[in-house]
Image (cartoon, rainbow, N blue to C red; front, side):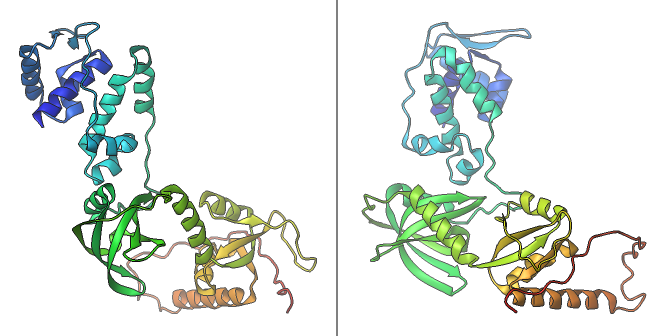
Amino acid sequence: MKASRLLSILLHLQAHGRATAGVLASALEVSERTILRDIDQLSAAGVPLWGERGRHGGFQLRPGWTTQLTGMTEAEAHALLLAGMPGPATELGLGEAALSARMKLLASVPAPLRHGAATVAERLHIDPLDWYRGVDTPAFLREAAEAVWHARRVRVKYTSWRGTSRRDLDPLGLVLKAGVWYMVARQAGKVEPRTYRLASLVSMELGSATFRRPRQFDLARYWREASARFESELRPMEARVLVSPRAMGWLVHARNRCQTLPEVPVDLIVPSGWRLVSLPIESIDHGARQMLGYGVEIEVVAPWALREELARLSAEVLRRHTSRTAGTCDLVPAPRRRETSRVTPEKTTPQGA
């Protein structure tokens, strides 16, 4: 740990030219007193560095002197691609290795290019967590990473919508999707890999047996194909919906995959400014709950079963919010009613009815 910190100080000075004890302490997450002791030990070991007092002072190496200790350790090599993502690197237990790898990379860049490289690191931040999502750090992430790095078989207890099962898996890769960790693994004795959400693991035992990784397996290609297949199977149905300009803005900002239909049925009356779009839905029940959130800014045209379910839910919501007598729910004062103007689309006739 101490030797690694001394090396980090050298690499930081080599990359930045000069740094105060406070800057070094902040970068390495230690006290300034620790940094001063480390500087004394480096100087005693023959490293040509000195310090200057004053506003523009700090520690620096003799001009032209560089360290050749830039070879990366195994952990640093693993952390290399996560060097710009400190959150995931820390979750994988590679936070310190990622910092060290970043310093070694910067130190290996030719001096005229270091400023530009440092500028990119200072001005580009990658946040893999989607809006309004909590952090999903699974209990066995580091064990899964260890199994992936060294091709070791694991025995897991996994919970899904089908129930809980025990499986022997050969982990092929890890994927971080919108803040959620997944493990791509092949069940022992089978050929095709599957995707497992790590937060759904109840237990994981890291075995001593290793496995041979498939030579043609491409993690990125597998994930693209699996994601496309999952999305198509998750929402196999399509709804045709009239949406107001306001609702269209909501759909766009929510990044929903809606498509404006170029042809509108002759017998369909479309209010001014509204559009007819197609939306993928998982089921009639799921689609009705999804459409209910848009209120009067949408009107379902088809399928008719979705339109009927939405009408039923709307009537139930109205009943639930108007059936209580005065005084039974007085924790929150009732808002003053005010008149609002809105466009209400006319009733349409389902196609083919």
